[in-house]
Amino acid sequence: MRYLTAGESHGPQLTAIIEGVPAFLPITTAEINNDLERRQKGYGRGRRMQIEKDQVQFVAGVRDGHTTGAPIALVVENKDWTHWQHIMTADHIDEENQGKRTVSRPRPGHADLNGAIKYKHRDMRNILERSSARETAIRVACGSLAKKLLSEFNIEVACHVRRIGPVEAAVPDLNELSIADIKRITEDSPVRCLDAEAAEKMMRAIDQAKEEGDSIGGVVEVIVTGVPIGLGSHVQWDRKLDGKIAQAIMSIQAFKGVEVGIGFEAAERPGSEVHDEIAWSEERGYYRKTNRLGGFEGGMTNGMPIVVRGVMKPIPTLYKPLQSVDIDTKEPFEASIERSDSCAVPAASVVAEAVVAWEVANAFCEKFGSDHIGEMKSLLQSYVEEAKQF
Image 1: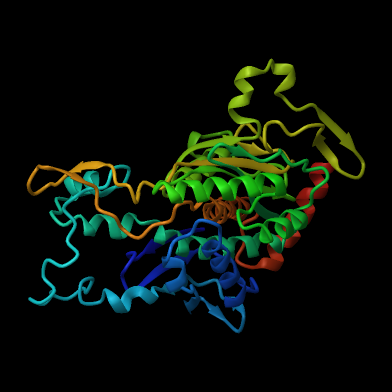
Image 2: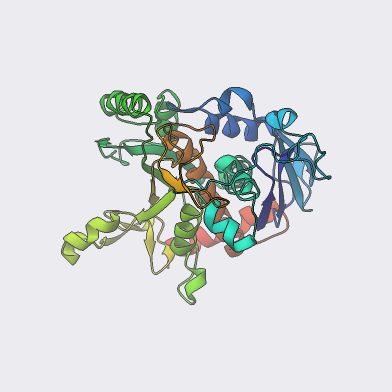
């Protein structure tokens, strides 16, 4: 499978075209809209969330509640477009609106200056509109479809927040928490945290950052269960699934780091406390006694839950602006302020869930590729039985 997205933050809509989804996957707009709503929630979100009530439209590739096997086209409208249509128009901007909302003062931490130099735009709005995290709305829609595909094979995906600023949540015991438990607890938490005591401290940390005109980042974790052995491949560097997932996480706006399993903690431990011992039973087949490697060995899934974390930096748009330089006058200036959140980590966890789901679904289709969901189920069933007795 593959997809491309298009659209600007204040343009008329966000669009995605998805290719390679098998036929007869049952899907409804309500399922995707639920994930779009989850992305808009979270303690610390800004006023944009009060404007946009994201809803997806299928404009190709879905009929009568099922995919057809043809390319799927998704659209999410930007409700704020009505206030920007004379400035963001594809046609010539009229004289009255020429120069309005022009950006010549790059914000530290954003794509503004680098993109303007690269594409030679004197108005950096042409950069910030596309580099905006608003683009993640359509990626969540694509990831929602991927989650639906995985659920047909009893593969489930969930996310939660591990850290916001200085506050770290207790590490969950995945032997005691099901994916359903994680979803239930995080949906009731304003910061999508499994640790209620830490969640209260996280909200206080967000409040403090907001009062100081600052922003705050954190760490999110995505968990995927029910994954069969052998997704991805060791035979070439660009076929390693953990590598693809790492790239997907790093592609999310404001993300600066990735860990799989115990991640960087592996550097502090001896090998005997890093690698996972192999066991076998008639019921489970091959499994690992622990899951320190986060479900991966040699770039391939080993049948254990996938556990991956991403680090989100604080949002760079601050209400106590950092110093910058005006590209027209070359004079120092306080960076311009675009409407922003004080913390978007809870929302970012939903985006991370979406991009991880997409990569797992893509690898699943590569392994059990077919034009029809029913055929894929038959292939998976025979493969799992064979793997148990290998």
